[in-house]
Length: 124
Image (cartoon, rainbow, N blue to C red; front, side, top):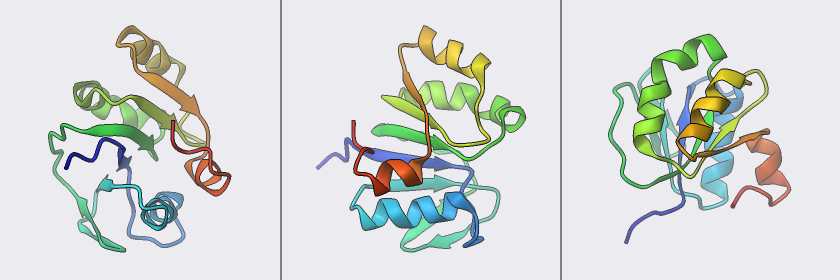
């Protein structure tokens, strides 16, 4: 079975105080398939944080936890995943990236993944 609603948490953290960490926990609690990329290898819930970029074929949503300057290194990677949408969490807003996503017909939201999940507005 293909996980067509898989979410990639980009900027995942092992620190339980970080919002990316909380997002992984909430996504798992909502039974949403999730993969994670961060700078430190480790495990959050049952999700392994990868430190090497992988070529996933079924990413529906990329939820960003990287500031705009750090996003630059991952823009091509995200475009190559061809997700249905990218969520720009607070502090990640990036108008230049919005324009690029529009050119590739990838939807984006300026929102908080935690709020979307807690108000049942996460799934598109």
